[in-house]
Image (cartoon, rainbow, N blue to C red; front, side, top):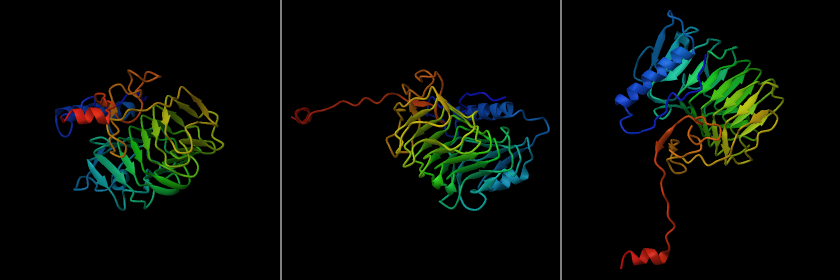
Length: 311
């Protein structure tokens, strides 16, 4: 059973890094992951860390795990062999970051894609809480899904590129679920952020899709009739924000009101953002990160007023 609730609400940035607030969030996250994935008492937990642990690469951690196991990835930036072109190899493993997407980055360095789901994985194969950047591939710059139905939640997909289609994600022949992810700065000729290919019955809800460099936001090519795109904020994508070829409703195009300026990489939300549950048109949290700052007021000031301030 899966619950559409943020595991990284982050209503206050103070004291998060390593402090009691972060530890409480981690406890909630890990507990919810275990609950939502219906993990049996005999399941094992594996730990990945660049400096040591059960494995030093993400692929190494997955290779150790069996279906039903949890692989926890420590904070850090993961690059090089074993940290791109990652396969689950048909195992329904929960892969979760320990400290959330702003502290745990998979940097593909344009060498390949982050994840390839091609082994028939089900919704019990989970990727949660990562920042995935600089992925590169023919189809699906960061993630390629063919004949699988994983669950992808609370991730940041940034600056990924595909030469064919699906700047961040290319999905076909399966029913993957994407919820509460943020897509920014991805691009491809067709489907700047996401491509729903033949017989893809993907479920996309409560995602923030913005700033695609080319190809629009979401494109569909013979997608399955059960595909669903709902309650997503889709805005400022080069090539358009419209969704066609799939069942789409209750989506909107409103400025998400990030806390950070464009290019800062700060995708936390202002408290009055239309992507917060209090102000969202669909009354639900949208995107990977929650509210973390007050509204920043900007006043228009004339040159005459500026000069008067220094007289």
